[in-house]
Every structure is written in C-alpha cells, then in structure tokens.
Image 1 (tube, rainbow, N blue to C red):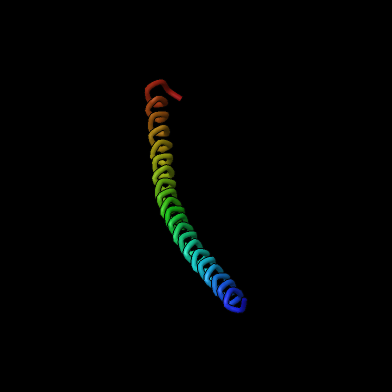
Image 2: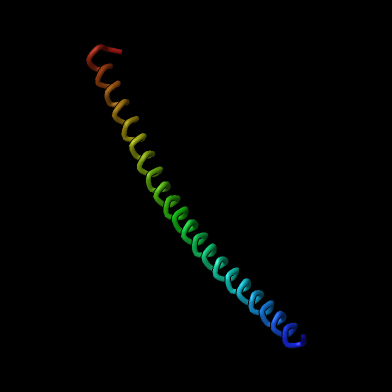
Length: 79
C-alpha cells in the first residue's frame, strides 16, 4: 500500500512538473509573439511618420502650384 501511495505521489509530482514546463514554454511563445507585434507596430509607426512628412511636402507643393496658377490667371484675365 505504501508503495502504491509513493507511486501516486511521484506521478503527481511529474504531472505538476510537466504542467509548469508547458506553461513556461507557452509564456515564452507569447512573449516572442508580443515582441514581434511590438516591432511591427513600431516599424509601421515609423513608416507612417515618413509618409506624413511626404504628404505635408506634397500639400505645400500643391498649394504653391495653385498660387502660381492663380497669379497667372490674374495676369491673363486681369485682377
């Protein structure tokens, strides 16, 4: 009977150890996924900032071109 009890206790110990190792593996996997997501978000944010600069530059250029066009119309048709 004592041998059976010792065997049950030992198996319970093995089960607990296995559960702990599996949780550590899952935790590590989730950490890796979170780091990948964070990196992708930071990369996208950096790209968005660059695109925002390009958009502002294009808006300024467009405004300048519109102003020049209006000046030409004024010169052509009078004020």
